[in-house]
Length: 326
Image (tube, rainbow, N blue to C red):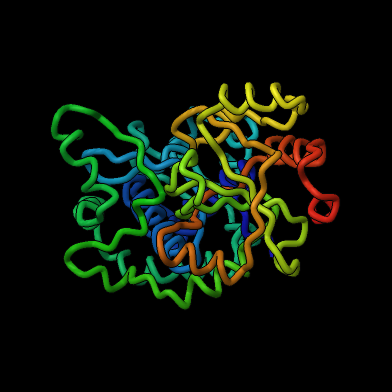
């Protein structure tokens, strides 16, 4: 079962989520209300199963979180030609200000997993009786929005949100969105694939390496069944790594640079050192995520993943047995 949100499935899922909600509300729905319901569904699925449904880029705004792609699709504006062509088959705004959207075609539920639909149904049943402003007030209770409240009150129109913050529990008792640890224990083995991204704390014995939370990418071709998970981590010390491998005579192809525009989760340009991989058991990964980690990130784009795998295969420091797992 494919549970990864690629750029293609993201716009298709956003379109079908809007379409589904409109059809559940007699064929039409307020745009802001739909955007808030999709955010709540993303939040619920993320906390329960370790990944969002749509995987949008969320911005904290005065009236709560807004998924930028979902908003653009609801307005049929500012998106790729493929996304626009797809969305226009299913939904359209019916007023000049694009505040109301209608469904014009039966929803295609094949883009969703069983758990996607489960969480969207739960959110609809819980919150569909609220209007858009009541939903905005509800989202103002979540730590991921509260974190940016002062910036918004200070004049900023929007602040980019971090999926890491979605795992923080609300102070008033977030019972509906309560994160059950056993859910994560089920979600990690279920969702893990080549290119999955995790973030967890690493305590290095070497004093030259900083112990902190880091991003890790799964490189195994078959991580669900392999005895060990092969992972590589990112670093912002790009030039330092380049100088080191040049000094010891290793190909510069083993340092794979990634710009922030290539992978939106990164807040700084980063690089993967393909000469240094980690072997982790599934049980240890689950423990690390439960303790000080998260697993809510979109899959690493295929073009970047290929460059990393090629870099690992190029490295003389990595054993053939590890390379064979990729």
